[in-house]
Length: 254
Length: 231
Image 1 (cartoon, one colour):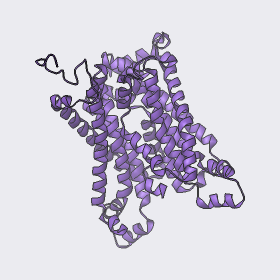
Image 2: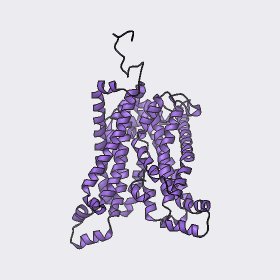
Image 3: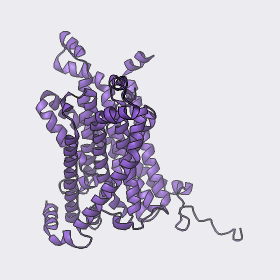
């Protein structure tokens, strides 16, 4: 238990937070990385996935991108990007050492849950609802923006939540390849046998992860309309599935 | 061509440092096999431990619906914690051992498995359950003889997801030196050894695919009736 008190001492030492390159700096850096990668993945992945879902095409791709994302170790991809000629370990603005490599890896790992969930969400809008919308004389954009998108929103949001968890975790692992972020406190501590420090870093990383998840859950709840409780069981299953949104891809694609 | 007596430097020598290098595979075969073996053992043990813990939890959650949301909330919370932070958090209790990695990975697998077990229970039609009770099945016989076999497809889907993600996550165990192929990846990064890095990464992905295929095969063997229905 001695390491725990060491960790506690490390956390209480103000200098460990405030000095240049201290935990406050690293925390800011990792949050910046997380937000940038998440926004990039949303900009790249969301329109395509929603559009494919609307058309009902490309389901195989949209579903399997998640399976591929799961099978590739984040650590391995980060390592490959860092050791390659480009992007390598070069510093990248406020993102720090190996910043570009980290950003690329983070964005790539944020894409699968966003794409799969957004595709499935639009695809799963009941056919009779679509038909009613068409029967009411809605144009295609109207059908999409007024009917399909609002109905798809909860599942899209849960995909973004999954992506957030994934990005935060991957940003932490970046430290294993000498990248930026709070993970560095953990790896520094462990590789220099200063376990108290490593555990202190882990506590901060875990606490922020939980806070982010809670905030995301809150946002999701605010965005969800009142019909939450009457949602179809299928939709609920999709929302509840942590990292297993594609447990039944065949059912989903039909 | 002018110096025929000088031996060719191997393709993984520092000067050449090729990404793909057959010589590396033969020269370091033992090291690669050892790392792969450790990787497989860590993955399989972790998923099994996860399954062993998940099963009673799922039974409990089904029996006491109030506990269900608590169990799901706690496991989701654990899932949110990055692996690189979860392993250190276990070190004060389990030390720098393989147990740390196995327990950490089992906790992640657990989250997926509890959910799919609960979904599996839900996938058993109520009529089937009632017929079994009507036939005089005891609770245990209902569970083992009727519910479990019918749950196999849903639970297997969860098991596949858990296994594939565990294969990938095992690499992070290199933080405490029990990362299987992750140890090679870590070494490859710190010594700028491209062949080692790429080889370990590729084996990792292949391993995930192989285990997934094995599970699909196991599922087909376990549920012969689904094949007959289809044909």
